[in-house]
Image: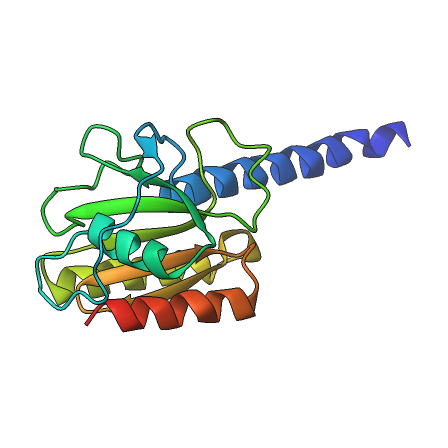
Length: 178
């Protein structure tokens, strides 16, 4: 048994490294450095058809129609965990929102779990980002998430959301973003 001990240590060490790398990639995709958390009454908008909409405008319209959206985190170039906001060929606005049906008790005060909306200045930039996220998401169930796009926006939902709940968000997103 003592002769096999180094191989067991090697296997366990590799497994831990893979988990840590997965965690780091997941945090890069979803983000965990959140600081501007607030609960806000949404504005009275039913759909957004202009090209210049922001992620905040979209989520406010969605929150108006859904009681399942809780806290909203609005990112700036200073607190974007991916450091992509406002950079060339990247998103121009980004938010994260809480789905109140998901347990949030284990998160830090300024973290939320539910979904993310990213808005881009061109369809090409949006499609490139969506393809990138889908390629990572398909690599492992650790990174699985629902991904929807319309216009210049991407809606990403945590895998903790059920397929039925994701369908509700998808329909609402498609109704709001024209």
